[in-house]
Image (cartoon, chains in turn cyan, purple, green, red):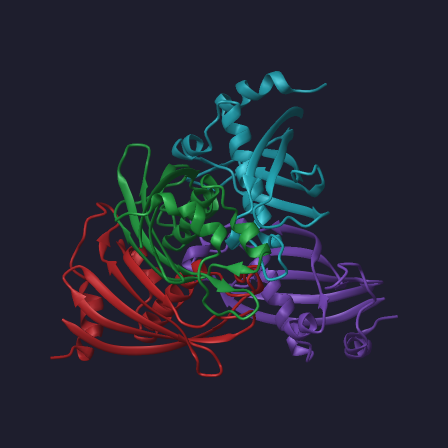
Amino acid sequence: MKINFRHKTELRVRYGETDQMGYCYYGNYAQYFEVGRVETLRSLGISYKELEDQGVMLPVSDFSVKYKYPAKYDDALTIETSITEVRGARLLFDYSVTNEAGQLVATAHTTLVFVAKETMRPITPPESFSLIIKPYEQN
Amino acid sequence: MKINFRHKTELRVRYGETDQMGYCYYGNYAQYFEVGRVETLRSLGISYKELEDQGVMLPVSDFSVKYKYPAKYDDALTIETSITEVRGARLLFDYSVTNEAGQLVATAHTTLVFVAKETMRPITPPESFSLIIKPYEQN
Amino acid sequence: MKINFRHKTELRVRYGETDQMGYCYYGNYAQYFEVGRVETLRSLGISYKELEDQGVMLPVSDFSVKYKYPAKYDDALTIETSITEVRGARLLFDYSVTNEAGQLVATAHTTLVFVAKETMRPITPPESFSLIIKPYEQN
Amino acid sequence: MKINFRHKTELRVRYGETDQMGYCYYGNYAQYFEVGRVETLRSLGISYKELEDQGVMLPVSDFSVKYKYPAKYDDALTIETSITEVRGARLLFDYSVTNEAGQLVATAHTTLVFVAKETMRPITPPESFSLIIKPYEQN
């Protein structure tokens, strides 16, 4: 089921996230996207922390990213996160990262899977989640 | 031009690389693949450090990874890195990660781009690199 | 020369910063303190990024931290950063970290050194810095 | 009770561990010291992973480090780890880091605390640990 919900989060590139090329290290974007999706869920009233406390986990099953323009130290980046689809146990997100000058820094995609903490098996999304996401379904 | 060169590197999941799910955090694999490609180049007699000292950089332009099975703390992982193609300024790598039990943990792909440090523009690979890689070209 | 300037910064513990103990990994606090001092300098109108662009760097020469109470995933932490002293080329900071419940999470201390980017030798702080910090000197 | 046991571990500075100063970021040493103590325990036949599986955790309660000489990308560092003391529930380690040229890169100290996973309360070290460490006691 296609979903259309977007949220913007801002964060700054930390010094420890740069590398000697003078850029934000390519491996650090994964954490930025995690911040993007946690804040996107929070803006919907969904706490990822509470999901885990209720025994539901959301590991990433695949992740891809295209680096378009380098992010540098102290850049204030905008992470636009879109929830694009719920497909069975899967939850799909798209991301785009822009800098203060409006340049596109990166685009990315992740697939997460709802799993039960106890069995580590895929499960259908909890109803509390489905109810909140329902108004954003697309036909 | 297709290339066929493979190399295996071993590393252990550090405590600080786990997350509260008890798994190696999905964002830390990028660093493992970097270690894989640096050691693969080193096994060919190519030092990435020296490339940079000579004014050639190799930023990642795209990266994708599929997580198949969780890596846990202290797991001794084998990163098999393959150089698969040189396409103009681009250098393509594939990776597979397995644990001690032989389980497939992840597969991944990266594209890197040879750029001149001074101009940050794509360049043809340095001849020192091309000469070393030549014997591994595929028809 | 003793200085008395304090600033508070808030940040949230990211998922990737936890470890399998369920706590924020002890090694990640160094980055929190860096964020603390960068924002403290920014609040004074000093951009660390501009300092570097002007050829002045501020590497850390020593760092100590006491962990008092675990920080957990999604905790909103307050980093209180104090500039406590300028001693020749040295700049001293103290930090305290508290969680939303007001519990003391950690205290820390760092010494940074003003160095010239070109020579990597200690230098007296740039005048632009000294003028801004002057009103906060203690007798 | 004073202990005298030393162990050397080698590791290489990863690209993602450098910062734009061209040095290994000061915050990454915490992970190097963790690798040092895990390998030091392993050399004694003690698996930190098994300790945790048996319900014993070893969080760090304090950590201090002095940075003497910058570590750079691809440097092969030697971490010399010393177990120096067991004091009630506390386990003390000292570290020194040297580069290939024999230059002293950093010295550090950590205090860890044996705690029960269930209660998170300090406990006396498990007997399996004490028996192994006994031969290295100093008078």
